[in-house]
Image 1: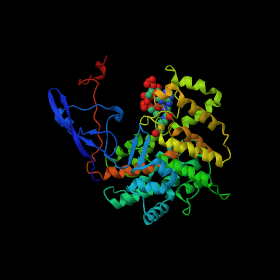
Image 2: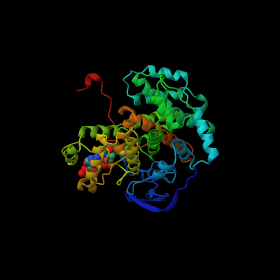
Image 3: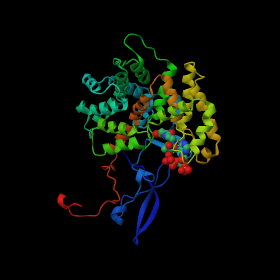
Length: 435
Ligand code: CMC
């Protein structure tokens, strides 16, 4: 990857009487970045930034978020436009290659992904090793990690062709693996992929078809799920994406790196919030109980938070939430359950919170998870599959970011430093002399 960082000035830093000049870079959008690469060499000091709240870990050309304005761009295109006009594989192509495909490129890409949707027969054996009640994310971590033992012809990460095959395999097999995890958990036979269907319809079919009957995918529902996938495909250097980059920075197998990303996504502070938002709406139950929950959310002595509100980066309405809200209405309309009580509670809660001084002053707006739980449940997915669907979509972002990292000449193995506050050096004490 060619670096496009433009030097725009210098910052001076003085420590213990020594001044060091550090270059400042400008990106296309976003804040300036102080380049501290030579900081340690020149000052013998480290910087301290747990959680990377002030640290850019890499240069990237894939995704941009402006949290104050509520903007999310994939390769420069606003997420709202992509969700409205594009589809999963076209956005995948865009994230991977930087530009929207022309017709021939789109056809070649679709065909390559379609040809890789089946999994090795022996991969099936891994599922049988899991308990039936295993969380599908546990199965995903295991089975995706196991892919690294199957495809030796596509794991030389220094060969661009092999990287390409690994990427296409990963994107193509993810729906098959995720649907198999679901089928296993409910005790139904696996359903093979069908190559005449589009990416999302094929996934819906692999989840909900049974051998005994024909399955027809409802177009509105498939379209809504396709939008949900597009909204979740990439989100800059979040925890799971940074995990994939860090794992990959050592030159590790790409499938194993994606398994690491899935593990990171599983946590409730990351991919698990949609499940929590749905549970909260169920707990609230009826609109008349909303004031009680709003009061709890504001109470400093109560750990309760309004799930689906607030975001580390967005201090404005999450642009994904706007699209999600509409998709949620479309799905409930298509299913004829517009009067779904949870939706009524959600809409009323959103209205009240958007006018409430506490939420307004803290810039706590609905995030993507506020409406995605209701939608996914209406589509027929159980709550423990919600994060799996997130993983399926985010795989595209992970693998695009992984490739960008491998192709970046500035890439080094990720190796953060620390401030050590443990015991100072001391001598070993034999067991009979320990107090
Ligand atoms: N309900 C009530 N108060 C809240 C909420 C909430 N949902 N979110 C933040 N606050 C308050 C918080 O108590 C704090 O108040 P004070 O300044 O008086 O101490 C202030 O707002 C700032 O909160 P913070 O925890 O310092 O902010 P953060 O950036 O560390 O946290 C967050 C972001 C998403 C973890 C948090 O807003 C939250 O817990 N939200 C609910 C969970 C949720 O919906 N998560 C999904 C995030 S979107 C998924 C994704 O993109 O991966």
